[in-house]
Length: 358
Ligand SMILES: Nc1ncnc2c1ncn2[C@@H]1O[C@H](COP(=O)(O)OP(=O)(O)OP(=O)(O)O)[C@@H](O)[C@H]1O
Image 1 (tube, helix red, strand yellow):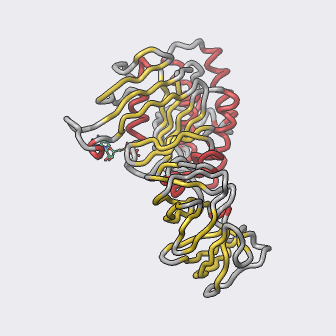
Image 2: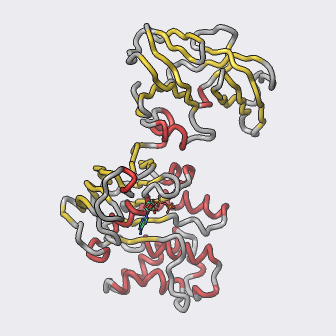
């Protein structure tokens, strides 16, 4: 296993000048030895580029990749000793499940007794022990992808295992099981795992640390809790959560906030720069209050949706839309009514130029 340090940028074309010329803007990042990471972001944000740079399939146009302090920027994937699992199964149809799982070990001339033991452990973890003697050709797409996962995990001496959206072809129910399985496997095998996905649930259930990316930038690296409670960038607030964080343009002045023509007193301990800011508050933390309650705004309710485990209330204040997630058993406002939403409290976040201030 290895600690991976990136200090690099990448442009696919020559002579990059603008930010938009880079698939990865200059970044410094460390992946700790034995950590479980996810690279999360929308299509085209640079996740696969970063993964391929780590594996050695791609050389960065600028900077270095280090494994345990050793510069491996010019080394091949084989020399880096990386295992990779792709979106679609990479297995040999004519081999049995056991032969497929053993393949990366036989390639490295691991003794047969050790191979048998390791294949047994991995098959057990993936609940494939009963299928070890079956030909891969006869198996379902799900089972084939499980073999691919197993082949990625079977060697204990790899620097890291890199996964590029490995559950895309898997049926939703099995997907859920495999995500949990991978987390358990991480705890048992203590491998450095890096997992690319555009699905926040997948990232947050699998990884201890999630790298949130947008437009070639890693805007935050943090635990599920940190990404939820203190998004460092408005993109993280939007992208994580269901629905994402509410953002209201505000003007801070003389210890007060002006929001859509209303004034709210700021906590005395909170020192914000004066001028235009954004207030961020998660729908989970927007509370329904009595008229005029401190930190609350009058809103016009436009929609009330029963989602089952919660009620989603959508409201307007001036031009701005605010969403609140309320418990199903509490009193609910009705569409068309006025209500008061508390937006200031311990969970409020303030942003300037999209970056978290306080
Ligand atoms: N081989 C390539 N040549 C030129 N540009 C590329 C190449 N591969 C990717 N890009 C561009 O680099 C940017 C980042 O792409 P990348 O595939 O890393 O993103 P991603 O987040 O993995 O997206 P997806 O989830 O769609 O795979 C995109 O703008 C993409 O068009």
